[in-house]
Length: 157
Ligand SMILES: Nc1ncnc2c1ncn2[C@@H]1O[C@H](COP(=O)(O)OP(=O)(O)OP(=O)(O)O)[C@@H](O)[C@H]1O
Ligand SMILES: [Mg+2]
Image (cartoon, rainbow, N blue to C red):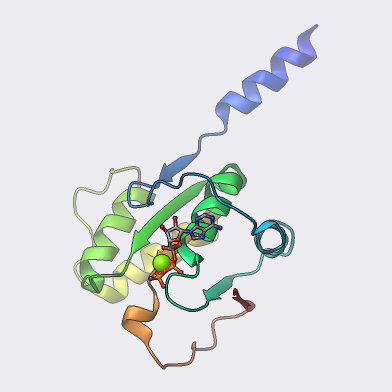
């Protein structure tokens, strides 16, 4: 009889951190089963580091990614959704994201961006994190991704 109790305890000890405040509420989503399956495979099974979802404006990129993010969120320790639509300064993003990753415990964040990136890398090395940057093209329009490791691109129509 002890085994099931241990199992429950372990499940309770696993704490998920999720900030999806910026995610838009979606009503019924039609179709997209194949795209969802592809993203699930790339993110959860293949552990792909970077995935771009590209397609015409209004085709349903945000809707698709919102759906899959909610579905797979329990596969991660930290899930954070952030919109770059207004091209917020990097410093604003870094402060919000680092505070989220530190469970709001960092009263003082490092001043320099370089030190903040070291801290960020440390969190990313120690935890499984999913970061969704919506409207990414706002800041990197026309530029190729730098060599950031295993990455894939899903074109949706
Ligand atoms: N599969 C779907 N089922 C139902 N509604 C959808 C679907 N895909 C998109 N929509 C609706 O179409 C509209 C545009 O979708 P969405 O914002 O996801 O597009 P987008 O590709 O992210 O656009 P943008 O390029 O402007 O960011 C939204 O109102 C959304 O609810
Ligand atoms: Mg969008």
